[in-house]
Length: 380
Image (cartoon, rainbow, N blue to C red; front, side, top):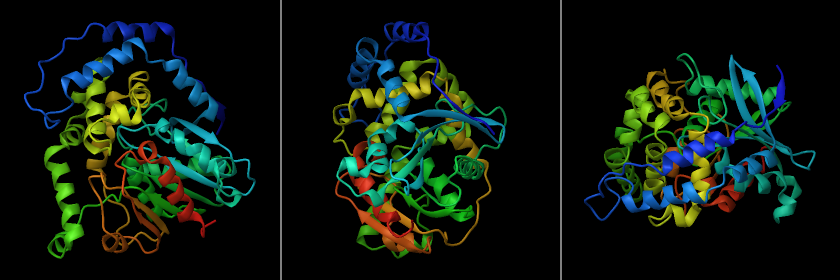
């Protein structure tokens, strides 16, 4: 199948219409608490929207995407958008980077350079990767599925086809967090040709009843964290798992509603001391939001949760593919080393970090790069 260079065609009239919408917002009353337990505070959202309307520049984000190299191809009847960045090192290991929701391909912007050209970033040539970053089906500038079935397993199979089509099928690795972790875990269980290893910054599994009963102090804190997330922060996941079309009307039609729906996750699960806009920069957060707003991906991206809820689990038992793990303290769903080793046959790297949360590539890019390199050092 053809692989074609791609550049999104975003007319000025669409951006002008967005700014007009942002200037005419019917705001709700402020929250009645002093924390974020009811969602993004009104003042924070008003500051974000004002910056979005007056100072944010989508053309800058387009330049960043163009600098990496954008392409499209068709896999299993669906058009897929992806970045493909080749290393200057001939023996670089091809590496698939997989985002989740509400992430995007741009969350990897600060790790692509160090991964592809380690020498230019103070590393060694033998640590180089050729990097492939696809937009999930229904996300960004990938096509929106028109029928059911684009679940985690199907996406994993599509990404294996993509790596082979790009000439990387003989040897490659994969990395992911959030839904990207679920896809990469599935790749490890499917063991497609050439897959040397995987790296995850989220283990896609909750502890079993036996693990809960036998939990040590560290594991009890992990259980408490996962419980806090489930009971107090995961309403978005329940809505998207059960009624993605219903929430999709809001996400597709209302830019402020979409922004609040996404920004709430940055508030809840990033390690930014409750100020993701200050820590990560409004441009980074709005770039991510725009990759949902511009292509109209609000409903189609939410539908991945529904697809996963209908899906039959893949191969059971321990994952046979060599695994590296990064554990960041503000990731709400974490696993201890012994829980990980009960699910994966070969843990080749495991590191617990002092800082960082769910959006590791944005929050702690240098630490993530170091862990990816360490994972694959013996798997090339």
